[in-house]
Length: 477
Image (cartoon, rainbow, N blue to C red; front, side, top):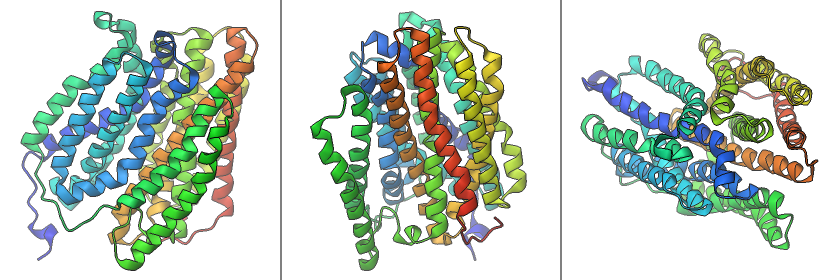
């Protein structure tokens, strides 16, 4: 008798699922909510440009590096145990963020937040098969997507509201402290409602692979973040040289692990699949243009126009609405016309960012929400149109045994792309800002226009790749 025939779902499974959604909501919202506070943080701590970049990049980068090994840790010692530990660490780190006394202490606390997020995020999705029978799992995964979209919409608005409200004169600190009661309640309910699935202690973590991959990415990220503020320094060259060597070492080690039957951080079978390399690589490229864009937009709107954090957050809401609006179309099309949808989304994104380039130049000194709204809506629609097909392409050739690894690897590459995009776009922004005219608005306009060259180029490449590269998949392209 198969497991699906004997599986009896818990009676309180939807309550338990709500607990998992709450944790996932906190994780995603913490990426977007901090953007509206960056100008305030820069002023309060008298922080340099590269320190402000690290407030965002440190969280995303650590999350990306630890996503796969923490997912494997849940397989080994039990998913609820790692989930609760992750939420606990995330909650504690959020409190440290809210109590930060310097920009360096805030960055350190954000690193801890990233560790907690990496521990809880993969367990939330991995626990779905333990809660729901096969016929209900599709709905559960759809709710995850809906919660992610809602978190991206509400993050900038909630951040703006909290900062403007200035509760107990705490200012920006409330955007982190709000996680403390939510996290505490999530921990208590998880211990009561989420099933305690036993782990498999026979599985091993690829520690050396994790070290090599993390070191390679750190060597890429450090010069990208530091160079715009400090200028190019001699000490940065060793990192540039080490990055490709570490990357080659990582691939070689994974091949060795595959040949000797050891656990691999990223299964070599995935690296050999053209559809995975194509899909996951373009996932990284797509998301390299999204978080970085929100970061520079927040700086442009608040420092360039003097908008409040709330109005800054409201300005980018049409982007998230566009993402949500594309969901019904993606659900209806399923796994059909994947490459064509990637092409259409890439063209839409490139066109929207080209139009935004001209709108920014035409804004003069007067801010117009109506001028930004339709362009940001279509940009979000383009992301929603493109993201789903890319993840499906990445998984299209994976065997059932490798689907979990392929999904986790794709998400990790997504976060790596986000971290690199944040470094590149904010680097372009601050480098241009430092050489622009003394007029505040003109300086920030020039900085935003320069950083938009990256998104325009990245999304154009995305569309071109969808046309030029052919992949063999199990689905219609």
